[in-house]
Length: 401
Image (cartoon, rainbow, N blue to C red):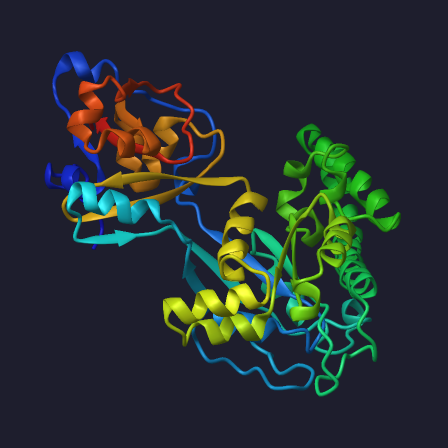
């Protein structure tokens, strides 16, 4: 059901926001805020899962979503992309629910897209060809699943398990795909730049991108040298941040030296280490059995938790919290966003009519034991339109429209 033009007071309790009226307060309403436009303020994290065939992509996806998709042991088992949405683990919500007697908790979510296996020559039509490329263009980041487990029953498409070679294969195909996109766009941009001065910057950056790609580098790795924002219209794959998931067995997961080597191989990108089969098994176990299984492979928590957090970090995201009798909820925003921008994630009216934000840090609230005690201790602050949100802020917005 769509929101009404003017939000009723009942939404105050549901979304941690308070509509406020009066000419004096109306004068405080901001007419604009820096940063993303209103229509872009609902932030979703989408990771496109790519990798060579038989590296465990679909097994990982099954564990992420608890859905059964085709995970057969042969190349191209995944032909159509499978999309799943999973919650970001956040124990803070349970504590908030206790304090506010919330009926439910609503975590932030992470979206994963399982893409058909990529092979050498895919950018030229080999394997599933360019089909996989179109499926990941809308993803915010690319999650490369790299095989580091040994299993003679699962044939590696290249005949041997070599993480460095697999990463090079994937990066090369993505770079070649971007080269095709850039070469196709350049004649159009050159023509536009001759008649429209405002297109000259786009042309120059695209030419710069061609040179970077031609050198065998991903665009994101060159972000200090190039304005990636100017390339957004081309939806270039290597302009996205990369996240690496090493699908390992117990021998690797318990080998600190090997893990360090693999982490350094992809630095400064984030790296996650897990056993996709074990992650699927964990879904069937109780808490005690889960802990015992994780300890046996040298892990302290499910790898999926690490993956979700790494995805947030890769994309520069964070969450703020709201709580009331109906629900305790985590909202996804970008790091460095202002309070009005954060309010806009709940509803655009909250940003347009933003007045103030009543904020307490999660840690201060927990230390105090209740909102009333936090206020009595001077831990609750009234912040204005220039306030930069911090991860874990517990917020109640005041607005007027």
